[in-house]
Each structure stands twice: as C-alpha cells, then as structure tokens.
Length: 253
Image (cartoon, rainbow, N blue to C red; front, side, top):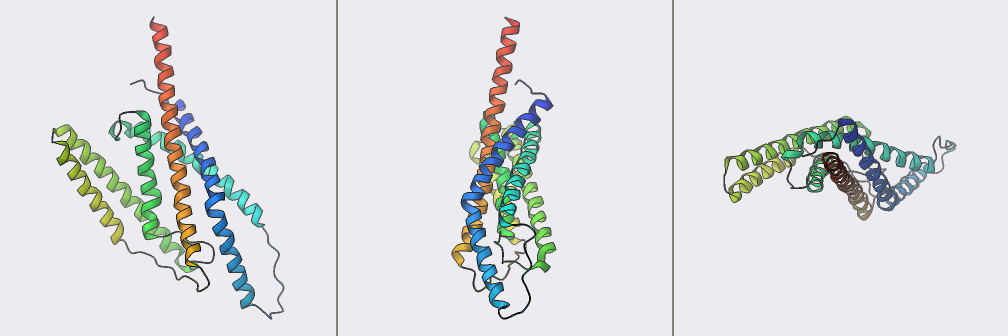
C-alpha cells in the first residue's frame, strides 16, 4: 500500500469537502429552501394576524432573506470543507478496518457511517424542524440530546467494527461473523431509540406535508454531502496512489 503524506491527505480531504459542500448547497436550494420559505411565510402571516390592529410599527429587517440564504450557502461549503478534512484524518486512521477492498469502497463505507452517526441517528431523537416550530426554552435540552446520540452512535459503530474485525481474524465462518455484527447493530439501534425523544408542539397552521418536506429534504441534503465526500475522496485517493505507483515504477526502471 502506497502511503500518502499527511499534507497530501488533508488536501484531498479538503477538495472532497468543497465538492461535497457544493453538492449540499445545491440540494439545500432545491429541497430545503422552498420549505423554509413556505414556513417563514406562514410564520409571518400568523404574527400579522396576532398583532392585527396594533399601533406598533414593524421593525425593519436587519438581515434580509437573500442575505440569510447567501450566508447559509457559504456556511454549508465551509462546514463541508472542515468535515472533509476530518474525514481524511479519520480515513487515514481506520481505513484498514473499514469494509471494502478498494479506496473507493472503504471511503463510501466511512461516509455511510458518518451519515448514520451525524444525521440519521440524531434525527430519530431530535427531528429537524422548519422555522416556526420549536420552543426556545428547549434549546439546551435538544442540543444535549443531539450530542448524546452522536456519542452513543459513534461508540456503537466502533464496537461493531472492532467485533467484526476480531471475528474475522479468529477464523469464524462468515455467517457467524455477520450474525454477531448484526446483533451489535441492533443493540446500537435500541440504545438510540430508548433515548428520550423531544417532541415539539406543532403549530395548528403548520401543514404536515411542509414539516415532512423539510425533514426529508434536510436528510437528503446531508446524504448528498456525505455521498459526494465519500466518492470524491475515494476517487482522489485511488488516483493519487496510482500516480505514486507509476512514478516509483519509472524511478526503479
């Protein structure tokens, strides 16, 4: 295996993160922003109805909606870049323990785990909500639950990988190895599901289809980001290793 230098690994991770951020931004505009815009219109309509007849003048917006959208898009790309770097570091540490026989396969495996840990599992306990849904007084509780789910999910994945590798090295039949691993996965899912879920009251004027459009769109956005990071990172690592092999072959010829 041709090892890559750390600066090179970080560069590849950053490049994969930027591409993943662009893909995530596109999905944000296509799938999530329409739901956010609808939710804001409903929230503003409800607020106007609540204050109808009041003599108070509405305050001008400090930040326009367009500025929020542009800032959010930039933030998505920056966060994805940082996640891409963290992804590259993690891959360098655990690549030999990941399922898959190629860099692309192992990279996709790690991306799938990251999506499960950082997106799917927390969404089970703390579902994403559009503007107008959620009580300010539960912010700390939601944040603590969100982080707890991520920590427990990470521990479950670590245990599953360790168990699978240990059984693989012990020479047990494939069926027994995967049965034990499946049992560990189910155990992890049970841990996540028994964590107290935070149920926020849904306003009467919030359509159910809008709520689910936002939640599904948010998960799809994250899925697109992680899938893109996994594919691009795996491709870049594979291509870089191939280039190193070609250069060493020429040097030793």
